[in-house]
Length: 156
Image (cartoon, rainbow, N blue to C red; front, side):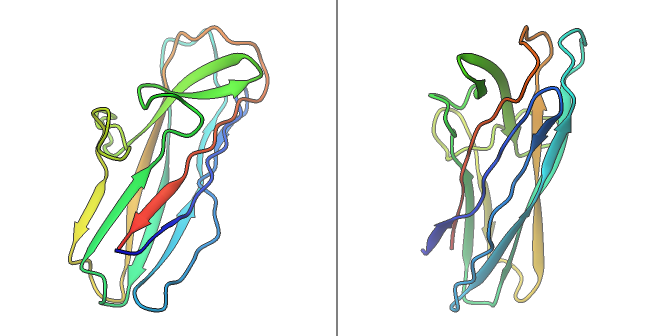
């Protein structure tokens, strides 16, 4: 399997935005990868609802790849549950998920996480996989920008 890292996720609270942004890389043998932003918007410490958003990881293979595995690192957090955004010493918990119900944490198969696995991806067709993000309610933080960096790893 070939592998490479792809994405940077950056989050700001109060105007909360996560960007799955990275330069696409093409491996002449097999696949190209790109991402689209996951933007949360504003986090309100008084709201009883979570802040949800989505982004995508898109790959296109030329037929040489028979298995695609997409994992996402913990970022600057010690654990996947939860990932944490930082502003100095302050932390804002969040996570990235594989499903719309936000029950399956997207990681690397460790610590109870899962990953995206595509066996025999379609030849010369874009495959877009949604990344579901959530910031849980009830976190007492001060206003400002919070950030984290995670890496999307694509093995093929």
